[in-house]
Image (cartoon, rainbow, N blue to C red; front, side, top):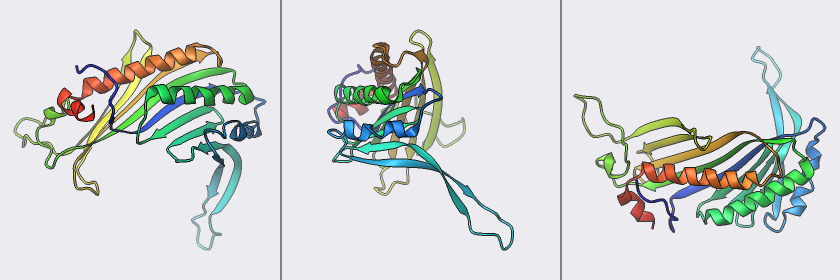
Length: 247
């Protein structure tokens, strides 16, 4: 397996830090409103998100579809360059970083800042899930050629079939019992993008479920653990030849 390390030109198109929580029954969505001001130095723009319900009657002569507003579902905050977004939900927070990716040492403190502010107003009873999701987009030559140039465990064609695979979609879920972490791993090749070049997508979603104290130092430690797990999976999926492109 290639050695995990920081890649200066990592092919990450989106990274997500996700912290889910159980809130008290007394929680009101309006409790989240002060967060837009508290986090304004990082996220100068904000918008309230709403949930709704559409009622559709297919009978002849029926009235047009009716939309019912079911209230606030959260708040979304954006950085000035729109590359960083924080979603404040009724069950936790998610921090999104779009390309160009910076580094874990830049993203993790920001996620913890958002989380600590969220805890101060939402007063969650417990953290129930921690997750990191990294979506990578890698351009390949056309035609891509043998997939073992890029993947350490590429799919293979059945016996007596043409040996060249030009597109595929694969998803597995794996668990590390020692760490108590799991991961959904999706990798696929899309041969129909606008650029005309095949695209290899590597989507790694690592997570851990349980119950933890919202202000516990365990939260930061477990995010670090998940990040290490994600790195191990990424570098175990791809060949050194492919990874070297992004040094």
